[in-house]
Length: 350
Image (cartoon, rainbow, N blue to C red; front, side, top):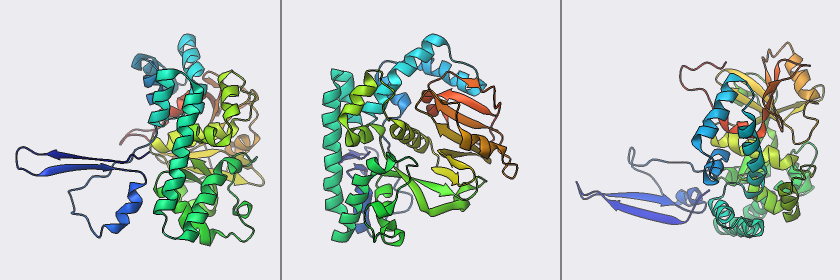
C-alpha cells in the first residue's frame, strides 16, 4: 500500500531537514538513484490495514481483542459473545479488505457499492502504474497479464499459478523477473512450494511452483465479482470464497512477518500454508465450509514420521477446540490468524 506524497520537516536545532517519501510503486523509481548516504535513510514497509486494525476502525475495543488473543495463546474457547462479535465482522473484512480508502468508505457510509467503486479505482490505478513504471513493453505486457490472471488462477482447485494459462509458450525463466517486480512493489504475494516441510523452509522452496495472491482480499473480491461480495455479506457463506479466505491468510501472515510457503506432494496432497515459527514448522489449512474437519492432506502430513511435525492448525468457522479424531490438530476461528506472529527473542513456542 503506497501513496503519492512527500513531507518535509525542518529540524529547528541544526537547520537540517527530514524527508518522508511515499508513493505509488515508489520503490521502482528508486532505481534512478545511484546511491544513498549510509545511516541517513530508514525503510518502512506498509501493508493494507490488518484484520485487527479493521476491527479497531469498526469500534471493537482492545479489551475484546485481548480476550481473544488470550484464548489463542491458551488454546481455549473464546467467550461466546466476543466470538460472535468478531465472527460477525469477519465477512465484511473479506469484502472490504484493508485499503484505507475502502475502509473509510465502509465506516462512513456502510455502503458496499461505494466500497467496490473505491476498490475498482485502486485496481485501475495499479494497472496504470504498471504501464508507467515497468521497464519495457514486453515487461509491461507480462506484468499486466500476471496481475489480471490472479483471480482466475486462485479460483482453480489447487490455486497454483500456471504460466501456460497466460501463453502456451510462457516459461518461468522469462517471467520470473515480472513476478518479482509485482512482489517487490507490494501488489502480489507469492507463496512458494517447498520440497520438504522442514526447517529452514527457505532452503527447500521450489521457485517454479507457487501460488500468487493479491496484496488485499478486498481487492481480490472486487477483481473477481461484485455479486460475490453481496452474497457473503448476506450470510451466504456457501459461495465459493475459499480463494478469498486463503488470500486473507496470506496477507495476514505477510503483515505479521512471515514468508509464505505451502506443501504439496502426490502421496500427501496439498496443505495450504506452512508457518515457520522459530525452528518449528506448523502446517495450516484454511477451510471456508462446514466440513472443516475433513483435511486428509494435513492428517497425512502430520502422520509422516520423517518430518516429526507436532501439530497443525485449521482456520474455520468454529470456536477454539482440539479435534477428537486427531488431537494434534487445533481448530481456530478465522480471525485468530491475526495472532499468528513470529516468536520474540528468547520465546519458545508452546
